[in-house]
Image (tube, rainbow, N blue to C red; front, top):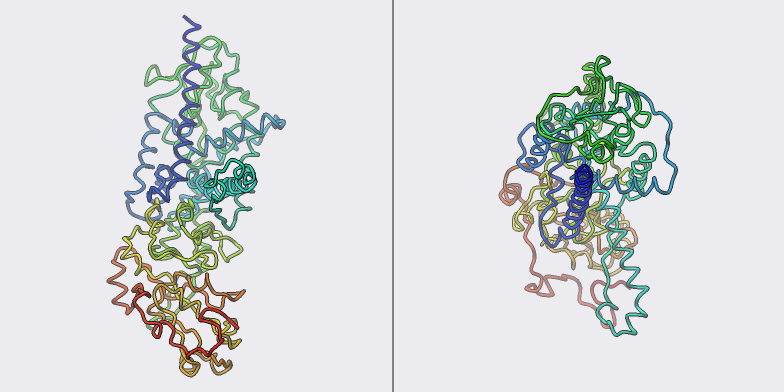
Amino acid sequence: MPDMRKSLRYRATVVRYMIQGAVLSLFLIFLWFMPRLKAGDIFVQFDPLASAVLTLAARKFLPDMIPGLIVITSAFFFGRFVCGHICPMGTTVDIMGTVLRKNFKPWTKKIPDGLYRLKYILLAFVAGAALIKINLFFWLSPLPLVSRFYTILIQPFTTLLGNKSLFWAQPALSMINAGQLEYLQITVRRFDGIYFILFFFALIFSLELIRPRFWCRYICPAGALLGICSKMTFWRRRVHKCNKCGVCAKKCSTGAIVTDGKDIANNEVNFSAPPQKSGEHTAYSECITCRKCVDICNINGVTFAFLGKKQPSVQGILPARRTFMIAAGGGAGFAALEFLDLRTITSDGKEGTVYPETFVRPPGALPEKEFLSRCLRCGLCMRVCPTNGLQPATIMNGSNFGSMFSPVLVSRRGPCEPDCNLCGVVCPSQAIRGLPLKEKRWAKIGTSVVIPGRCLAWNNSKSCVVCQEVCPYGAVKIVPMETASAMSAAAYFLDSKYPVPVVTAEKCFGCGYCEKHCPASAPAIITVPLNPLRISEKDYEVTGKEQGLMLELVNKSAESPENLFPMEKLSEGSLPPGFTD
């Protein structure tokens, strides 16, 4: 009978591994097929830290964050079950930690006392920043983090590897007449900031050599939040008998077990176990219910069960109240530095501040301050963008600490497709509003501006109308130089024998097609965040028409060549429109 009980317990651990593998596989499947499913990855919405802190930062209840609130509630009943079984970040850390410990020698020396309190301090820090509506939790929130890891780093790498494999296999495919596979190509996406993300996760994974699940033990503020809720959990570890061998304490994944108050958990710190009690003590706020202690107990003295006889728990886990207050104040003070980016302006005789429009954001993005406070930086909108135009903001393109990894339209990489609204559909926090296509086409994101000094027609007196040809809104017109003189001061300094392009701002959506296809090496027409239409609740079409916008897609097939190309008649032997001499 004991052997059968033991085998059943080992079988429970195998079930945990199966659950972890199944959840991670499902997470990756959703991530891979999101563009086809036209649905968001619901896993990101289950992040407890994002749900709690985002609600605090937004100052209102967000229905999209209900799954995360359910996870927080579950901690009162099942402890940190999500950390040990469900969280894709925890599973990824487990896998990488196992691989590293098999190939490199782990660190066995003692680490600083009290390090386990760091995650609680980080939780207070990001909560303090949220009090003044500044989002800093995207740096540490596990599910957006792991989503960013797989979206921006792993998925492009696997597609590149697949594309190269097909290229190398072409001779063999030709020999077996596999024509369809021979000419198959996989679209490879490229993202900015990939080296920073590689370094960030390499650091997280390398910490596994110091202690197993180092991220979950010491850093993850989401785990700290669930740990606070797990102090009085109903389903918890129960010790029926103990011979004080200390094996369970040494093998505990998170150092949650202390025997006789001694510091024996992998040379971990003493969790301030009450000295008057003997036997085992469990820090329920640190326990991720992995059930490893059940398997390795040589006398079958450990189980997990609901309620039962009350047993002593480890005290002194949470930092002191003063430490919490200092950390929260530090987070608020650090986040307040974001306001240094605000520009003082004068409007109607009054001084005020505005959030600068530094980047071209996706269509439907909330006003900048609200957008940054709600954006999880999960990378899902970048994953589904069909043109690869949405890129993470980095220091290289002018981002500060608070806007890092937020989505930015880089038109030279890819324009905003008028017939696509996937970025708003998949956004888990609705920092990008999910708009119908008809309304999305009125969500102006910027304005294209011609740089005459770079333009082939303006500066080099060459025939070029590419920007007009590709503009889906008909905002670019080719006009005689004399007409352009009244529109741009540059006409007084430049002279061209050909008509030149100008942009009608009221018709320009800011999609970036003109910038993407401009034949100049440095684009002569660029999209800038000039007069974007960004509203929280109102209808974009109604608001756009009230502001005098004329954002209607142009059916160029119905236009006459004279209207489409109002240029001088080409002489015999000259090049057609769109080509240069």
